Image (tube, rainbow, N blue to C red; front, side, top):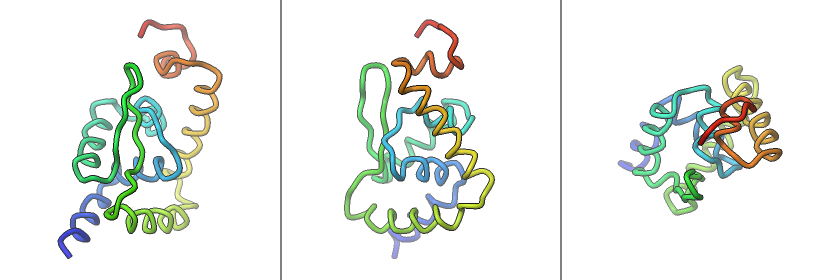
Amino acid sequence: MVEVLNLFGILSDKTRLRILLLLLNNELCVCQIYAALDMSQPRVSRQLAILKQSRIIKARREGKWIHYKIDENEYTKHLLSILFLLSDWLDGDEVFNNDKSMLQKISSMKNEISSCGYLLAGGEKCEE
């Protein structure tokens, strides 16, 4: 019962829930997450740290960037079922749809370029 209560406590935070819904079918660079959510990097990183400490997500480093995905373990097996249901439930939600739309735009831009710094600068050439 304690794990279930902890899980719902984690899901009760809007930012963490938005992050998990973005990660539902994707491994994402931290730059993609905070750009899609239109939030500051420190705010997103704080929530990512909570999710990582809770064994819900895991991270891998690629150069300067950290990529996150939902950890596939016994704890998250049930969480994934809940997230898929929430994804269907929130299909008409403006915030959820905006997050998905932003992620699609960011992903298509990132496929055309190789640098998260370039992506976050809105396509402007910048120093990393």
